Amino acid sequence: MLLKFVKRNKVNVTFLSLLIVSILQMSMDAKKRGKLSMLDELLLDSASIAQRGITTSYQATTDAWFGYIYLIGLKEENRLLRDETSELRGRINALKEAIQENQRLKDLLSFKETTEYGTTTARVIGVSPLRSFKTIIISKGSIDGVRKDMAVVTKDGVIGRILSTAANTSKVLLITDRNSDVDALIQRSRDRGIAEGGDSALIQLKYLSKNADAVVGDLVVTSGIGGVFKKGCIIGTISRLDIKTGRMFQYVEIEPAVNFSKLEEVLVITDSPEEYGR
Image (cartoon, rainbow, N blue to C red; front, side, top):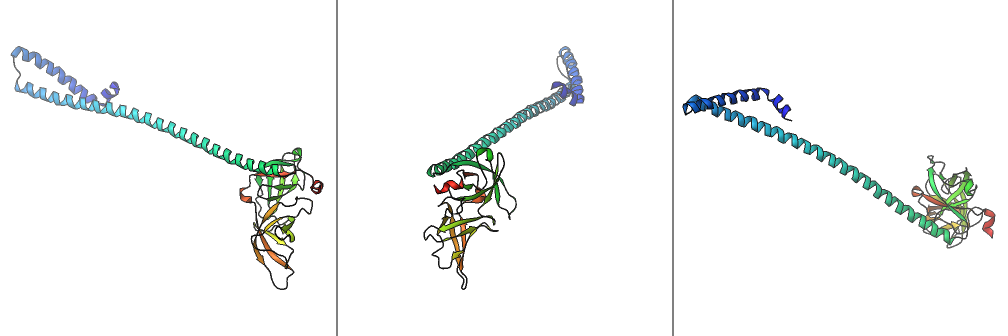
């Protein structure tokens, strides 16, 4: 530190050194004479001013150096605090996700305990990017006992059916797909129709007689006919009705009970279709 200061103030230090030597010489002469001459006093005053200037410069340089060291330490401390805060936020977020997942699994387990059918829980691990072909991929396959045409549900209602299986995964055709059709009935009036998917997120209840007793808000469930879904699984609620003159059937739209955009875990009903009638 001192060496750097001397190098930066080489001229001033040399001048001050010569001045100090001169002052010492004058002091010795003054002792001999008993007093200082006017020139000697002027030189002493100049030396004093120069010394104060160099001392002030040295102090300022020293203060700046230690201030720089302090700022470097403060910057590092702030970086460590930011890293620690980021890590804590990550842990809190992971904990929140775990709590929500546990709640969803708890709800599925509760629903599983109320049904007499064998089921297996699976995670949704993929979604078809095609709007015209609505499928999802789940984390259970043939080695878990999952087979083609098994029903897939949640506690809220019908998801769809198993379209194909691999060893560890399966593809599910959603009930909202245009290739899906489920025999259904209006829970209140017991009037029947066929629930079919389409291009939108809604489901149509087709072949419902124009004389059928149906109103907006009626719950639509599976009839149990067709060998895929057991009787009474919720499909959704009627959101629109249209009875046109000259037509045999009503136009009926169903709002699905399941929010497919937020689907994360499902239940596969593993009992074979033949067992549904027992």
